[in-house]
Length: 373
Ligand SMILES: [Zn+2]
Image 1 (cartoon, protein in one colour):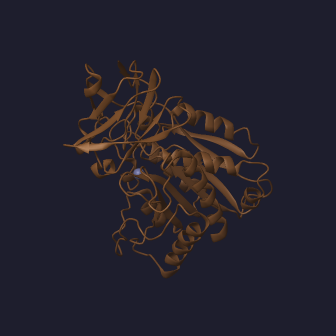
Image 2 (cartoon, helix red, strand yellow):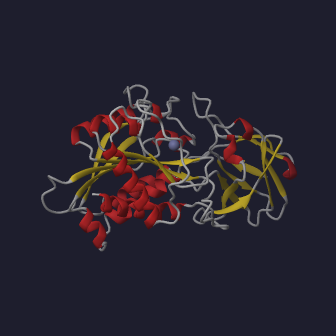
Image 3 (tube, protein in one colour):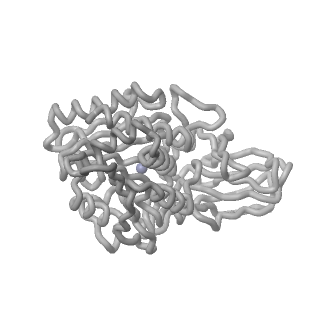
């Protein structure tokens, strides 16, 4: 038996793999951080052998409720990822399974590797309306990629719409969402996108946190910074990812902003606004409500009943991207959350919430944007 994690986005520590019925594992902390929850590893050499995998430190993870009623994501071919039930016993997450092939992969959610990110950027750039700006480098020296998509004709006078994802690198569904958004925006045969691109320029950061993504982190960058708490005062030393994107926003301007995330615990798709901004108006509320309501009408996986509690006036967190952008640019600024588990009203027993459903939700989000312009 062998367990490996030394690959793009891999994360697990082996405590003991002496017996197949007692495989003891721990999830590594994000570097220089207390956070952990993302895992991704390969189990091999136990074909047709009943195995019990135990993640010993599940109870101390960032969001332990995320492991309640949780079904792990697994794959044999790294293309198709299905769900398998787990149990929680004495603070351990247990997976009792008999592998049917020589190697099988387990992950917290369908992975989205940095190699796939490179593929996504390269494929998007095959479109003549998509341009790449490398804003600078992350702490580990990876490029921070900004894709700019502008339809033909005079681009001035169009709304500047910003989409960013994966500030929290373990929330890989956010980059599946990005894949869906980018594929649709650059599709030359999509009449909806062509019309939208006459009214909007898009500024897309498909991965805000390449270092955390490659390192297999849940929530932070290479030096332990939670990027979605850095927006009030980012630095090139500790949070260049946010510093560089924030500078680009100031340069180009922002008329619409969506920051894409995943939520470990809540089995719902929902949007959090910035109702707590000091200058929040009835008009701001109406714009937010319209977008959310329209999205719920377009896509059955999205709902408006359950989400984070709304903050009172002046309580908005300006160190978060939406608080910063809403305050600085006075535009509609929202956080989209998708579940790690599944959606309560529209469950999928085989796949749960998935990369494909994340991509479909991205298409719907673009349609809601078109409706709200
Ligand atoms: Zn997040």
